[in-house]
Structures are given as C-alpha cells and as structure tokens.
Length: 365
Picture (cartoon, helix red, strand yellow):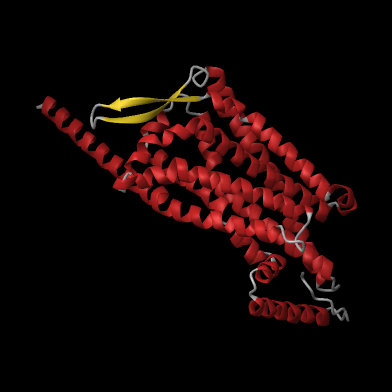
C-alpha cells in the first residue's frame, strides 16, 4: 500500500513538473517570442529617430552627446535580445525558423560579451549624464568647465574603453561545437563553458561579486542619490519661477525633468536585474535553476532590460519640449509644431503675468 502511494505521488509530481515546464515555455514564447520582437522593432526605429533629432544643430550639447551614445548602446542591446532571446523562442513555434533555433549559438562567444559591454556602457553613460546634470543644476559654478562637449566626448571614450576591457574575460567563457541530437537526428550547435569559464575564481569573483558591484550596486546608488537631489532642485526652481520669469531657467528645468524621467525608468527597469544578481550571489549551488518561479522572474527581468532600451524616445517626446519641436521641424510636421509653440507661448505669457514680468521671449528652440 505504501509503495503504491509513493509511486502515485512520484507520477503526480512528474506530471505536475511537466505541466509547469510547458507553461514556462508558453510564457517565454509570449514574452520574448511575441512581445519582445515587436518591442525590439519599435525600439530600434525609435532609437534611430532619437539619434537623428539629437544630432540636429539646434540640439547639440554635451547632454545630447551622452543621449546619442546611450541610443547606440540601447540598439546593440536590442539586437542582442533579438538574437539570443526573441528569435529562439519565436522559432519554437514557427516551422520555417527551426534551423535558427539549432544554429544561433554560433553567435554566443562574440555576441554575448558585446551585448554585456553594451549593457554596461548604457549603465555608465546614464551615470555620466546624471552626474553632469547634477553639476549643472546643483553646482552651477563648476558647470562652465565641466559640462562641455569636449568633456563629454572624453568621458564617453573612457566609458567605452572601460566596458570593453572589463568584458574581455567573457570572450573566453564559452565555446561552441556541433552535437547530434539522437531524439530527432538533428545536428545542433551546443554551447559549453571552457575550463576558464568553469574556474572558481572567474565564476565567484568576476561573474558574481564584480558583476553585482560594478554593474549594479555602485552605479545604482549613485543614480538614486543624484536623482533625488535633482528632483529637489527642480522643485526649488519651480517655486522660484512663480515669482521670477526666466526662459533659460525654464528650458533648463525642462531638460532636467526629461533626464529625471529617463533615470527613473532606468532604475525601475534595471532593478529586477539587481535582485537576480543578489540571488545568484547567495545561491552558489545553483538551486534556483530548479525553480519555475525563478525562471519566470528571470524572463521578466531580461524583458524589462529590453523595455528600458526601447522607450527613451517616448520619454524624450513626453518630457522634452525642445526635442518635440525639433522632431516636428525635421519631419515637416509644421502644423503640430506651430500648435505646440502657441501653447508654450500661452503658458509662458500666463507665467509672466503671474510674476508681474514683461519678458516676452518664449522660444524653446
């Protein structure tokens, strides 16, 4: 009787595990295979549009240089997401793409380190323009020497060099080879860790602790502290503007609010990755891989990274008045541009009247 109960229990557990596994595959297909591919297409186009607008002569500034670089990093991340996540899960349902599922691993030894370098580059670029905005808003006496185009170019060069050097060990982590699958008689490209990739120092020091501190904790603490300081500065500035009208101060506030929105979305979207890295650090025996809950959490965390790389254009349009006007100007949407300018003029005039000022300059371009 007891042996029968144990056998039934094992059968039920096996059936339950199989059902959970099928549910996980379905979940990943909808998140990465469908939503991920659509989001990537939108993000790639949106980031190109951002680069076009930010490169316009009316937008040229040290901040625009940082945002152009961020858009480039984001597009590399989106391409990597398509190659390593979105298309593989889409190919599980699309018969014509079956060969892709068996061959995409060829891209891992080179593409994987590049994608991680791009992710790290986007993180440190966000930190760089946050620091610059903090100096411009909260330490204006230092802004003339610090917030310059040449300083921005040097900073971006240093960041690029840093992320490339930091990720060099990743190029020695994996190797790929062909393997015949006896179940379906199909030759697949299989990824395996090298001896270097399996070395305890590499796995525990570099992959876990260095990753946790240099990729997430240190940058995130800087961003969180400076973003709070920027929000307080904008609040104080708006209180001042109710009494004193200043076009340049208004434009600076608009730029700061736009960047605060970018930083806020960045922190929200990247936060699950911090949790994931902490889980990795406290789970040296890799028990997390037995959990379907963790698998779904990891799927969501990677998808949120993709969201972060795709939505900055929307934030620029929503919170960047100057960006909107230049975008409409470039693409010939003059009626919308004139309507926006009229609304800005009306708002500006109302602000001036409340402040008993006779200043009439309202141009945002």
